[in-house]
Image (tube, rainbow, N blue to C red):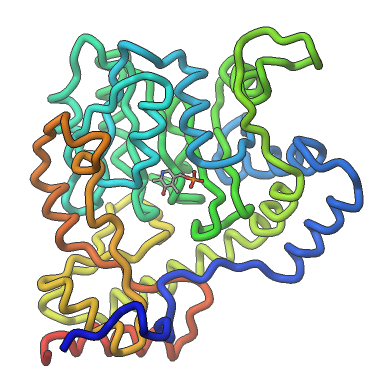
Amino acid sequence: MPNDQHGEAPPAIPAARPHLGEEEIAAAVAVLRSGMVVQGPEVAAFEEEFTKVSGTAHCVAVNSGTSALQLALMAMGIGPGDEVIVPSFSFAATANAVRLVGAEPVFADIEPDSFCLDPDAASALVGPRTAAVMPVHLYGHPADMDRLGALAERHSLAVLEDACQAHGAQLAGRPVGSFGAAGAFSFYPTKNMHALEGGMVTTDDPQLARTLRLLRNQGMEQRYANEIVGANMRLTDVAAAIGRVQLGRLDEWTEARRANAARLDAGIDAASVVVPPVAPDARHVYHQYTVRAEGRERAIEHLREAGVGAAVYYPTPIHRLAPYAHLGADLPETDRAAGEVLSLPVHPSLTSGDLDRIVDAVNTLERK
Ligand SMILES: *Cc1c(COP(=O)(O)O)cnc(C)c1O
């Protein structure tokens, strides 16, 4: 008899463990006592400090990663009649942002090693309406920005990086979020750092940065002198203060994720599991440690019985979700990945004992 999942206790080693400690709480309370609670000094400081992660001249804070993507597309002038090439193997927000500005996502397949947008597949889909290409640095591994940048240049396309899972990831020493015209980050609790909710648009272009600032706040720089039509995507100072505390620990947490991943790489020798390859010049920040597993559903059950929380991101690729299925995209590598991927815990609060237990659980899969 299969176990009733809903009646089970949560696994001893959860798939993710968002951090919200006393320092974050104190920072939030200090903002509440200050009375300056929305898009004030904490937001300005958070934006300034985040430029060190993105390596860009400008950072514009917003209320979510989805807003960051949407705002960036709006600021780039992408809308009705435009197509944006996106991977389908991502969180739905990637494509939703395109639809929310009135443009159409065009789904391209992924590279099997990195799980990121395949530049050749993207190239084959460029047409007269293509306005932009939107790679996703999935699981914290950078997409192939050299080849995607060359493609964009050849066809005069804008590049927007979905870096929502990749705070601090790099290619040849250059941070993600600095390759495209703009990048978008998320500060949702399960990400590598969070602000309860929040997002950031990163760019080197001062004109684009100004447009982003206008668009997030009703199109105004000076109060009641609205210059253009804008939205309200402002970040609160409570969120920014929490984000700043987390940002101060991002390097330490990223190193812990990378060290945990190295332990898993070295320990896992199960024949039915493929550990995640890393491109030679990439700094992977392991938002997820995602393997391919033969017989995945059985593997998940085995891992859960062993107290290891395993999760699947994403079982249904975006092109098969209700709002996009009619487009009829044919993406064999995306479908294969969706059927095989399994993410093991890699978060910074894992202990050495936890890592041994995860490795043991994976390496005993065959004996089932
Ligand atoms: C989390 C995420 C988003 C959206 O971020 P939110 O802050 O949840 O709106 C977008 N794209 C990807 C790839 C994500 O993982």
